[in-house]
Length: 207
Ligand SMILES: Cc1cc2nc3c(=O)[nH]c(=O)nc-3n(C[C@H](O)[C@H](O)[C@H](O)COP(=O)(O)O)c2cc1C
Image 1: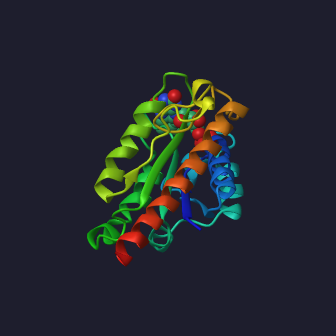
Image 2 (image 1 turned 90 degrees about the vertical axis):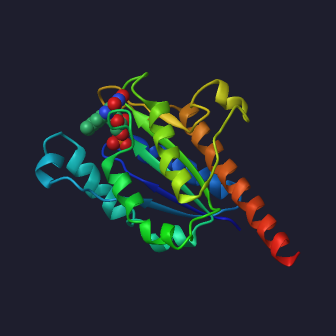
């Protein structure tokens, strides 16, 4: 049974919905899933400056544990989810990634599967650049990056070949059913690749 860690950040719940759908897809493919929300790094004052942010964070922090390096070591696959921040991953997600330096130094993440998804507020607001910026740290961690390509018919309706996406507009519009279906496909695909790599590793070890 492949072990999939989904580590996401979200303030108004859009990326959270994608994360839940990735989890559903991975579980449907037989994976054991840990769904984790990384924590705030900005002040409470900033969180309270936009209606819904502080309430959303409080709700999600009560619902999801924070990811730890031990979760990353446990996982066969790590899927990173984030809202776009100026076309890049959020500082909150990146701070958690930076906490994995010790595991990186010991080579303990090398060969695990990695994948990424995100949400933006505008249609050309950086979905693809955000996924691709996650590819940078995934490469450094030694993760085997799993993109989506056009391996499922839903990819011709939504998402990007680099990872699942949603466009939330000005009022935190929730992901469409097509967006969620792409995210489920991402979860399935990641679990299938992680399972196949684990089998490969066993075969290689046994000679
Ligand atoms: C500091 C900051 C920078 C942002 N940068 C972008 C951006 O470059 N492009 C974009 O479309 N949306 C941008 N957004 C909007 C969020 O990425 C978007 O609302 C996202 O869907 C929120 O996801 P969440 O509901 O999971 O928090 C930005 C938001 C903030 C607070």
